Length: 388
Image (cartoon, rainbow, N blue to C red; front, side, top):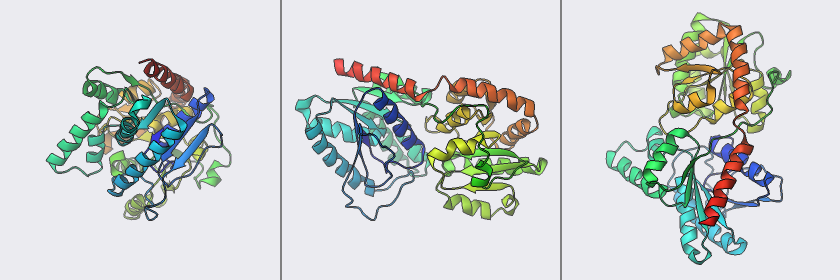
């Protein structure tokens, strides 16, 4: 498995890789993960080996998502490390994450062409659209180049995987009919209507007697975090007993925004950093989950599945993926504005019975999304590609 990222860090891409690996090993697989020199090793299983490139770029400490030219050097190191490991381990399949990982995996399969190693591409989102949403491709010719690179890379794997229905459709068009599969994320953590931890309020410094609205995810602007702050500011002026819990990382940018708005001093709690393993306890102490991310990059929302696993009613924007996830387990906001997001948050805060009904629906629907099902689907793809 190629993971061109500082694996493991507590964010969405890494969570998908982590849970996929655990579920595949439960089905009898042995996996070797080639990754950067940074990151934790979250596994304690002899069937999972994490191989890191040499720490030649010892000064490179970036663990959050984003572009860096130094990653080119790290990716060359992964090609070298991956080729050496493939020579020794003789893998049947290379499972590569992201467009970057697919390019690396393709290089390894070409260098070892006589081995006939099959390549699977696990595409988490659109390469060009994600870079543009991060503010990197404002020059149109540069955007067109990365769109071309995305199309070209999408055609390299023998079979391709996408985590959202939106990007699965885009991949099918780019791959011109070659095998492409929708493989959704699963729900982690324990599922229970009484998922609360009596110590969670103390652990995370959460106020009691408030309606707690939680956002658990990254704080980059393209996640919709500023829209959420504006929406909560509107809602908190109309109802004084709601409280916003912001959980995730990196925290520096969001701290600056909170400091510039003194009205949030008593109404917002920042939990950062947040370990993935602490997410169920935090969510179990809250009342409403919110995801203000707009559908810019074709990426699925893993946080919504986590909210569902905790039995939270959810407020989010209208996307095909969110509708598939939620059913009647949340409020879908069709107009993308702070005012409409605030209306939906207040509608749930004002209606405990509605929240109770949505909790049941959210929890029930979460059972259809399991990492075990994800692993079963990937296993079928492995079998298919091995026969070609």
